[in-house]
Image 1 (cartoon, rainbow, N blue to C red):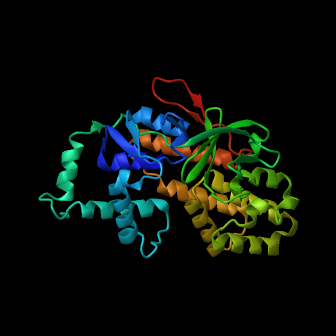
Image 2: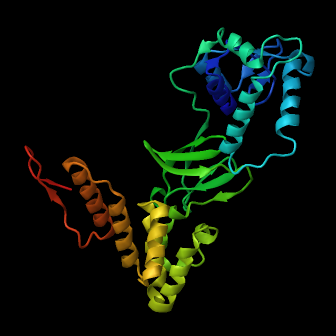
Image 3: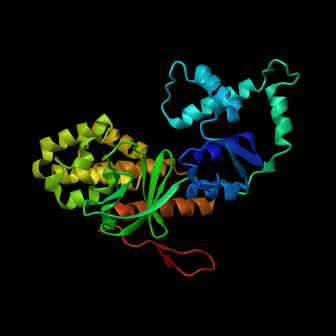
Length: 336
């Protein structure tokens, strides 16, 4: 279904009818009289875009010969040799660029280019709906005692605070989104393996901080690809702090919950350069970096920037930062 969304967005219009094969993701069953019982998600796509569906006869490839020919052309010209891209998004952008280039070609026995003929077809198509179809499989689940949610034979992690709660799941082509109530609580790249476990280490840090003895053996942290500076900081902490090193290491990692990885990484590298080997030093340097990035303009933006910094301070050092009182004209003092 995701292909429909991207194809219609690429051309900017919606065809009035489409000729389909009898694929299982489209047709749940062919009735004795030849009628098709559509799959649920496919039926939703047709309703959203208001498309009349037509089908080729089973085993009759000549019913859609042009389609088979175009598939062969795309395979020979775009898939040989096998392309390599860092992400599916980059691959799709490359394919779109190749399609735009091909619109300038003129096929034999035709006086107009492919782009000109396409424009003629687009004039007969319908306009796109106000919003695109959300092409995802929807399901429900329950969080296990290990803070995992099962979807399509694989387990995906959620924050430990949601243990044993009912959640909703949306499975997209490239990702899985998990939510509870009206909140999205986890996002993961989708795995197409079987019996795989996909962890987000940040989901387990609050629990590991309480049960610090599990820090070295925790499975969610085993394959966490952290920048080298974090490992260097931990080794230097081990040489100085002994028993407290694990808890302080977790506290440094938990900064990623509230700040961008890039900012935390920069603060850790600065702390190493200065020889300030402690979690408090990393916190201080991180706040300095956030403050230096803030843009100060008129009184409004300056006030908002200071409030944002004060909120960060309260989150990092709640025991030493009192509630902030701000007085503004024509308003009573407010606490933040």
